[in-house]
Length: 383
Image (cartoon, rainbow, N blue to C red; front, side, top):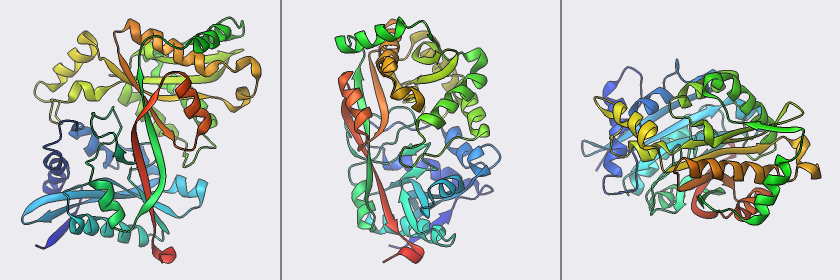
């Protein structure tokens, strides 16, 4: 049966609707899948709304077979990534298909051709649309729903990617953390930092969220700068992030730490939006918005995701501040308990980031999901 590939074009409402609905069809039998909000996915590809397009290019396709949509994929180029890493890598993402190697191969071939036409040498993914969005293909941990802004896949999908000639590049870990009692060692680390006169801490404030997010990203751009694949967020992306999280942010599960008045460390947790939208079928209308607000503000979420926890490089090797990570973990654990939250995800971490992974284990975290990033040589570098 023939396969037809149609590109996602702003003016083509039919393809745009198919791009949203095909995922719902593919995951229809999976109780763990949570449909993202359609408006968020549409806005990701809107060149006027998404500041990614100020330094990147992207498009997407839907595959039809037998008159029905059966898969989708995106392709993107992040020129900031290329400027920093000079590795010739372009990305594919939003990769969701039926269990059919022909369909998967056709979609990935289309993404590869688009990237090769832009003189890229490697196709890497899934990344949608860049390293600062959903990353990786789920390869372990299919028995639970994903947290907010984390991907979900069916067990066969990694095999389809490998069948198209891509190979593992890097694994990413998501850690499960039961909110409650913390190890005595971590309590001691917290208390030692709390006694230091030059150290102060406060939540990220919603009333000054845009200003505080600039502080967060300043720490982020310093603390993560040596990490594999790191790309700093632009000023416009910081502003957009602040706008996006203002509705759902809970101040008590965030912290900014200052040393002698200088921003030194950050922990940014967000409530698990997926817990609140699982039954909304991707739409906030007509009653979804009211349900979402009630679940966030009245009932309160029971789970959350720690998205960022980082310390400026200059403080990492100072023995006096060795307990900063423990201080942040314990502070957020205590606040989460008061909010009635019972579980959290710390995600994601690189498989070879031993220092961070050991620290999470020390706090009682355990790996419960693994995501894989694949890569393939294309264009001039193709075998």
